[in-house]
Amino acid sequence: MASRRAIGWLIGIGVLAALVSGGIFVYSLLQRDKPEVHSNILEHFKYGSIGSEDRQGVPYSLWLALPRVFADLLPKGQGNGYQRFGFIYEPGRRRPIGTSLREKPLGQQGLNCAVCHTAMVRESPKARPRVVLGMPANQFNLQAYVNFLRACGRDERFNADALIPAMRKADPDFDWKDELLYRHYVIPRTRKALQEVDKDFAWMDRRPKTGPGRVDTFNPYKVLFNILGPDDKTVGTVDLPSLWNQRPRRGMQLHWDGNNDKVEERNISAAIGAGVRFDPASKESLDEPSMARLADWIRDLPPPRYPRERIDEAKAGRGASLFSDKCSACHSFGGARVGKVTAIDEIGTDRQRLDSFTAELSRNMNTIGTGLPWRFSHFRKTNGYANQPLDGIWLRAPYLHNGSVPDLVSLLAPPAERPKFFYRGYDVYDWQRVGFISQGPEATRVGFRYDTGVPGNGNGGHVYGTRLPQRDKQALIEYMKGL
Image (cartoon, rainbow, N blue to C red; front, side, top):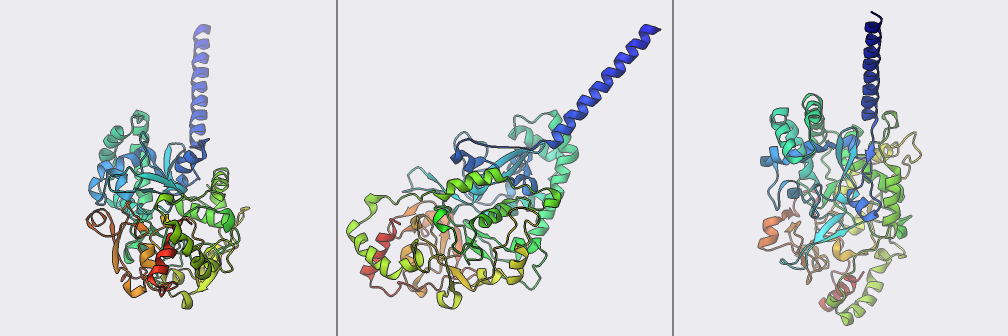
């Protein structure tokens, strides 16, 4: 009898210990928040977490499986799976550049800074592509990627029976415990979240397609603040910028319309656009140490140099004096007007982006981060577009704030003579015109047809230098290659 009682106590203690240890395991699992971190800053820029996975991340095993189940929803284009959106894969990597991973408690895939600031360049159609960090991601189509996720969430195939077999194939680490969790919780919850994303981005369906290398930065914020009314048809689409040389940009009016002059706020607002949560009531997700590392790195990141052997030094020498006389005040570090706004009535470029960012939105932007050390306070409404330094200008094509002019030769032509349409997203460089090849069979086959007659896509204005003699234009371009 006594021995039975003792055995019963031992069993009870064992069960209790198992429950306690199981509870501790579950608690620790639910509390897990382990970001992907790389000691090498280049690898961290490409693959490290900035905290975006929590608000707009997708469970990693599920993310790997989506292109398999929904291959018919992928856009036409080069490559397979996520390559169709312009994601860049390096050899031996399961994830492309610009994606991050964080264990929360399952692996969550998110986006980081590199997704919008990394691109490929080829010297010729037969050359190997060169990956350039800090460059505008002019092959990446963010809108098409968002629309793919939206379409997946609407599709009846978004269910456990269709997705779990694809997850097993896509992720060798996917096991029976994952299957239980995904089947009964993760898949239904993710579908619901994607349907909310679908509603939040419905405004895109009423505006022209952005194409690769461009993004509507601030209309999503209007949705967030519930101020995007039905009568607001403004198109805020702009070209993705470069990240080079942030130190000398301190104090300049940033973003295309110069609506903020604090580099730190510009960086955090970009991180929020990638998915970082900023509400302290529900725990902000910004990974400040990671962002600080990246900010330190881009502070003095130089642009790649144009191949010196391709520059006519004699022409460039003549162009230097022309640039100093005609351009440097607005486009050289230290110039009197660089980093300052030129009024829209003077510059004359497409005003849709300017009109999209309103005074009301500016006031709302300055509430972001309330209760946090980095609360925004520098957003303001302007009346034009900011003059940009031209460092690495050869890799920042297409030109103007909306990417409406394909190359420097076209930019120095009168607006009426600039191409009415061209193709964006082809990675082969045009050494003669200084931009990317934007016409011809291959550009047509792989590129996005950019129509300058579409709202927000106008290529007028910025007539500076368009009346110069052809000889002077050639010299000026030759000099600008080396900036």
